[in-house]
Length: 568
Image (cartoon, rainbow, N blue to C red; front, side):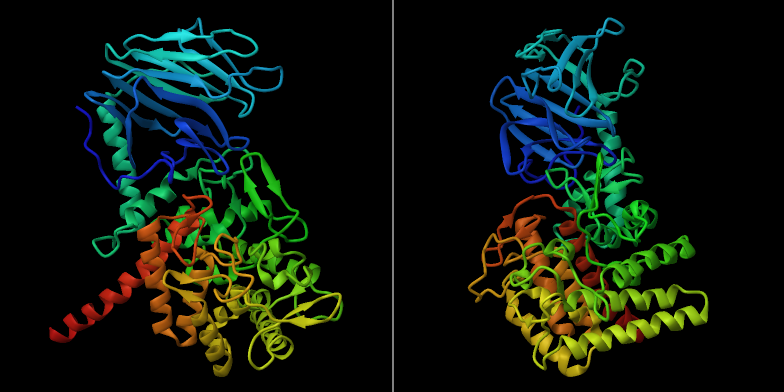
């Protein structure tokens, strides 16, 4: 008997079916914005690669839950569950399955080679694109191989029958391993997978309930996008997605760390620390890290001091201080022009807001958001420093940068951007120019009021648009020129709350949470319609929902607790 469905049901076109620690998943999404007719086994080792096609013998309905994937047709069905991060079990009854190489072409440098292993009669694909092997072991029933040892173009794989029950295991591994041994019944494996996810959800969202209907699915997006250490990924890591955005970027990771911090602090600190494992000699963090690639050609904004304010105490405060000091020093030394107090970006990509209209006039720019983030980071260094003189030095630098921000970039109504080489200044209609609200109580009240009023102008029914909706530069699917994004929402909500605008912060939180409950956890959202855009299973979006929901639940429950205390 198959284990009953548990947790939310979701569409594979939106969210891949995967497992905590696994480098592969199951999805019809096989490349950026590319949807296949069939579900594929898609690996993220050495990049995103479709490896195997799973083709039921008849057109089937697909049901995905956190622990089980099911194809059903009339009285027949196929069930798939994870046995462990690199192995799945698949069983069928009354419904056959063709399990074929996604790429039919084998060349000396690409494609799949397929053979039957004489050691245990398993069927094995070796795939150039991932550099890994995929073994199919028949546990029960029968299987017919296709294209074993074929060269060139051929159909390769196994066919499983629809006239008798069958069960197989599929494994991803390197060169060799012991033959697969089935020790647990299929239903036991399914029950264990369900328990794994349930424990994760209970840890990261113990407050979930009717008021937070998307919390379990948000937890699943994080749980299923987590991979075990491999390649350049030095720690258990939450990828941004197990679609095509299968990397860790050096600011995205902060939001995932915050979402995990209360329930799974060790995993949260792994997220925070991972980019620092690749900090270069200048102190810079890489732009991104993934299985087989580290990119240093751009950086990402220094929000790490802000993030540390919201994380539990570091398990290694001395090391955390040293790493944050190096990252901050990079901005102070390598990203300040001679004689300048304010640091600069070299391109919009450095800001994380790649194509924001702030960068339309020039790319090498001193911006108010960057200075604000560094003020917060300098404050955090002052808190972490154990030596009073060192702490005072960081505080003095934070004061100087805050004062320079207000003196040089505030024109009395708004913050400006300044070209480093030209010296000219300009304003834009980008939400990026309003990010100094993250300084909260550090800003003078008139500045806070002006920023809050301008943020309110960006607010649509679904949250703060990254470009003013009335701007001629606004684009519904314009990346950072209109759509709603999770990180800007979380940063602004937090800043408004600390700046003394809790009602506006509450409204932004409520609208974004409602947006996720309506449209899922996309990379970003159309600010006018709320439609999910780009990659549809983005972890920092799921994390933002969990962060905002947890905080809202705390605020909702605290008055009740206080009332009960008074009544007693």
